Image (cartoon, rainbow, N blue to C red; front, side, top):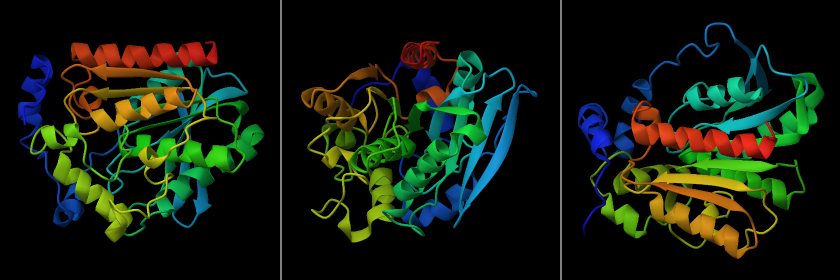
Length: 311
């Protein structure tokens, strides 16, 4: 099967990245990969952002990131980190959300949900929903505006963000005004053309995807007994959702499921802005942030949030 070529600037970087990050991740590699997660950078950005931890119990916590200059009450981005359902924590991958916070005067609340396979479905998405409910109920204490909550996430976090928004719709709250789904992991069936095209290539290939979904769902992966909150691509009714920003690279496993999800939102009468970045591999903007394509992607997200929040 012919594969989509990588953007030339990104391809050069990928050659170096692949020396330490293979495209295929198996279950046996999870412990080693967890040890290799890079420590978080200075999340205070030199002192212009304050940090506060909130322990929700049962291994779930929130990191509240507030720019010193942010108004009170401020809009809030409720951030859900990536990592294939099996890696990462709430201090990883915050560079872009913190940039949004400083530029737009908003608060970022990042949730540390429990990981699979130790905590399989429905634990991760329920942890994320629990954190969202806490944020809405404690808005005054947190100094945020409960009428301006945006749920956002990348990769597995993007899939969990979509699932959390579906839970909020179906459980009658909290109110969410927008969802930002960055290269979201949405479909446990792993049968799209793009998943086959990327087998053995790039970042997070078809084998890695099977590893992540199996950790989350076990024997249910790919079968009929999988909820829409775990695998949002299975939802047949996407009406009643807040506006969505969805982006993905053209040269990555999640391309087709993400395009299909945006299409399903439109077909349900909803609003979605979709970007497919030509030649982008999974996580290109985070791993090669100075690349021209990465800069375009970052600007598009910031512009969408600015319009949504009227900032």
